[in-house]
Amino acid sequence: MSDRVAILGVGLIGGSLALGLKERTNCEVIGFDRSLEDLHFAKLIGALDRGTTSLAEAVVDCDYIIIALPVRMIKVMMEELAALSLKPGCVITDVGSTKMEVMDYRHLFDHQQVVFIGGHPMAGSHRSGIQAAHSLLFENAYYVLTPGDEALQPEVDRLQALLKPATHALFIQMEPRHHDRVVGAISHLPHIIASGLVNLVGDYNQESGFFHRLAAGGFRDLTRIGASDPTMWQDILLTNRHEILRIMEDWLRQMASFQEAIATEDDQKIISLFTRSKQLRERLPERDRGILAPRYECFVDIPDHPGMIGKVAVHLGDAQVSIRNIEVMENRVDHPGVLRLTFKTNKDLLNAIMILRSVGYIVFTGDEL
Ligand SMILES: NC(=O)C1=CN([C@@H]2O[C@H](COP(=O)(O)OP(=O)(O)OC[C@H]3O[C@@H](n4cnc5c(N)ncnc54)[C@H](O)[C@@H]3O)[C@@H](O)[C@H]2O)C=CC1
Ligand SMILES: O=C(O)C(=O)Cc1ccc(O)cc1
Image (cartoon, rainbow, N blue to C red; front, top):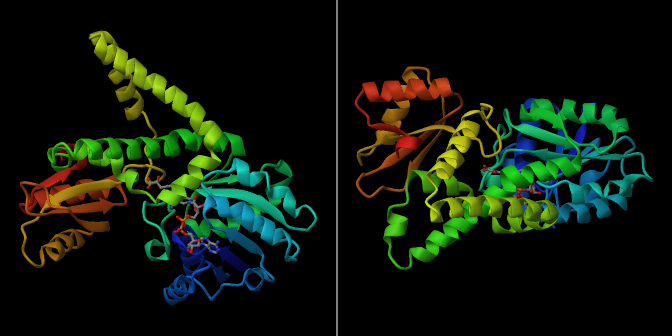
């Protein structure tokens, strides 16, 4: 008999896991959400076998329960689950972006024959909701598991066996505290910086519209994640506040050394700060996907004629180059229109640039914009 999986919260992450499970395993997938409309939509796109707004109905007889709710709702949900009678052997996991707080609640299940294993698929989007879900959202991304106890290895293996085909992610195990420190530095601080920078330039833009009109490559690259969901980030920052506050102290020290080097016109110091970051940035491990990973992307100038997007896609399709995504960007001041093309591999990107340039298109990479 196939496994039964309950997904609690059928939004971007829960919906993407549900789609992956339905597309690539033979599990029965039951969705629980407060929004009936989203449950209907999820069923319509084939993410669920059934949807319900009743928790007890969703989790009855389940072999796995995946909590994909906003971070601060996860522990509330764990309390509610602990009060229900769950199937013996059931493995419960979550997908929350922070792990320390949630892991403190895992002992709520000690009186039942069920276990909790923390989880964090480290890919996502600044969009939310089931409408943005995608069955390959986690492909090649790291998926961190925080069992918090070595004795749970058999259950970890079972959980991975379920999630691996559903996600095509790379599974790793970490201590919850270490996880929170690492994501604090590589995900949470960057979101704070992006948001702060957008807000600062937004203030300056009230003096003169040129601040926004001239905002191009560097500003846009650095601030994409400044458009993320405010309530999700409120939860993340508050549940990882101890690590984030420590990391922010270090960040302010970094800023102070730039400030001092500039104020004292210290050429050598400025060169050494940028030389170090250039070397470290160039040595970052190459990855297909992952948190804050650069997408393989290029930008194509297109004249404002109907059918131009189709023509670009046909040129690449004819040459067997697979496109991950095509997006029409906001118009730049001096160009009628720009298409952003993203690819799965660097090879596809390089082929696309060569092919499109050979038939006369003006193609930029992000660095040139
Ligand atoms: N968005 C991202 O890029 C990533 C998010 N995460 C984590 O995944 C979790 C879910 O995030 P998303 O899927 O982005 O959010 P989302 O907003 O797309 O989905 C959350 C879902 O939970 C439902 N929900 C909220 N409160 C509820 C309640 N009280 N009862 C029943 N249903 C409720 C909502 O209707 C929605 O369908 C969060 O803990 C987040 O930290 C993890 C990795 C990436
Ligand atoms: O879009 C991006 O680059 C993200 O950073 C998405 C993201 C947000 C939160 C997570 O816990 C994991 C990934």
